[in-house]
Length: 299
Ligand SMILES: NC(=O)c1ccc[n+]([C@@H]2O[C@H](COP(=O)([O-])OP(=O)(O)OC[C@H]3O[C@@H](n4cnc5c(N)ncnc54)[C@H](OP(=O)(O)O)[C@@H]3O)[C@@H](O)[C@H]2O)c1
Image (cartoon, rainbow, N blue to C red; front, side, top):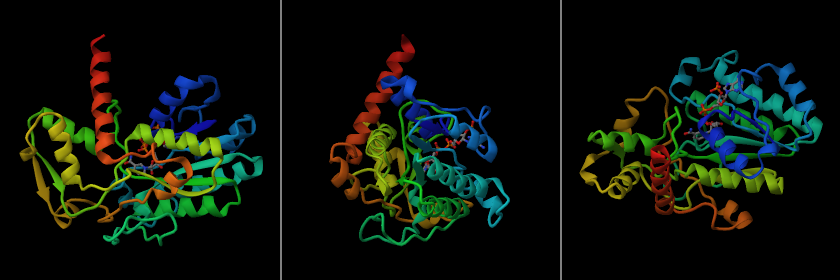
């Protein structure tokens, strides 16, 4: 298995969990050793390995910063999120490798407030990050390579990583005794990162081809999510200030979908209902993870 983007928020946990089981089977070239935008180097790297699966997590994932490059096909956002997956898929197709390409709930415009988005629903990306990710998805799926596009939403972890997530932002604020704003009129399905990693492993084992949503099994709102965290930490939910989506949006450079919730029933039908859990079950696991990280730090 080759993992590209193994130092990122998602990639680092993929490496930690997979390496526990089968360290020798995971190849994860660091950015300094393999620049995925160097197509000759990428080509050569993939040709010299007999790994049957490639997991692509190398991306530009900063949604707001991407706006500065809006419309620029020569920019880094486009290169990483659209051009790179296309080239990668082409090489994987030629070499017969299974490509798992991680994408995002932001390919949808979030206007569906009645039901969560299914894999086949119409896409309509709003910001430049979202648009380039959407182009990347299409190019992978159209490449002819055996490939799976895995859309994830708001991955969160109790492990430390330089890239933050909403759960750890809540934690930091609460620990500092500071309030946090939580959007109350937005339906989201944030996913515990360890569950993403388990899902990716099952997809890799099956060599599943197509699109799959990997997210929480039920929806919440950022407001309720933050309140659940406060409660678990024994704190007052008064620390969470409800906010309207349009007020939150006014502070952001990139347009975002209001209801980017994902329907995970296809994944559950294929792989069982135990992998992608409810938000509350995920948060229980997150709190346990925080506790074990604290114990480990004291050792
Ligand atoms: N985080 C989220 O909230 C979220 C939500 C939905 C979907 N996703 C998707 O999940 C995937 C992973 O996101 P993430 O949050 O893990 O992103 P991340 O933390 O920003 O990681 C991006 C990875 O890409 C690598 N990379 C960037 N440019 C590279 C290059 N030229 N050559 C080689 N490697 C390069 C980075 O390495 P260096 O750091 O060494 O440059 C890093 O390992 C992305 O496809 C993203 O769209 C993320």
